[in-house]
Image (cartoon, rainbow, N blue to C red):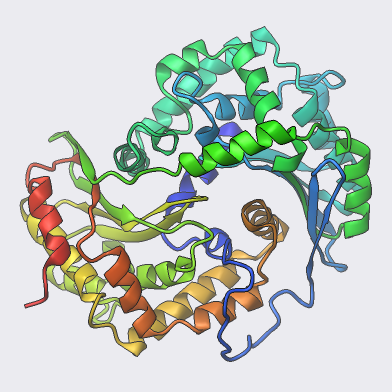
Length: 486
């Protein structure tokens, strides 16, 4: 269960993720009008939100014809809330959540879920921890009971802690075999070096071996507070029912006291990460490819440029050799790389966090003697975005983004994901129709202004693994950030 959860959490950094794409825009921001959707994607559903007296929030979207529901608790705390010594604690807790509570043994918990035909899961990211259940509508009360129980009454038995150390270490070994995830972990580590956002989610091996029960209980006491939690429902569960369940199971949860809350807000302002122009290189000539990620400082979920960053990312595009030999591949970069056989694949990305982000590209190539050309022409394409973007390519990118957003909201779990992340971040959820209007209003001039401010002559972070001897030194690559097209 935890292994699958880890995959979900790590996949969030990849390119055009609609789960992220709907996440944030400042309430009250100007919205341009465009054509309406051909079909109402939400079928008239609206997101309702209620906050209990202790600060615990309930948010849901009710679909009267749905026979199943997804309910879950989104917590505004992940690996970023840890210290160097306790890095890995949030993920460790996720593993232990299903190992038994004060009133349910591990076997009883598993049997209860199986008997209702439900599905219980969790995942950890850098800024959030999520526990959720999928079940028939009649079993929603039992599902919320279970979620409340594992969040408030987990035993955290010493024997279970010791067993999970080995499980997490094996999971870490599996993650280390996946080159893309290694590259992105190193990208964070160099871009935000010496800062919480630069740490991995699993934590270093020595921490996994030394995290204590006191570390786990301290993390819960500090971060699992009512004001940092949202109970989310999607599907056939009415909002009023979910509020009643929250009152029953979560109303006694503690809220952060005002003093600690003020301190936390002050620390949050002070701790906005500094983006560090830097690089990390791990040369391994036994690997068949060079795997390179290059990024500038991106945008936060709440940034006014959030959707413009996604449209700009879509203009750069994604490409894989397996796509075949189509003469028209959409983005200019994909066509150029395809025609010149410079790479096996590339993936542009715009990864957002609460106060910063990473905007860039991940490239894989077995043409290890042509890495210089690959990087040069990629960054030259970035420079082009500052002064020569056509409305046609912007419209194509917008259509791709809107399709990605709408297609991702298929099913109660994906809708719950969307609600949870938006409410945790901004306190409200933008409906897909609103997002479509915001994206539809973006023009070529907006993309070029974004590129001038965020890409042109900006420091970069580089993470490279594999046969990378042909990657030029940092300053040579950095100089390409101001290169004009010939």
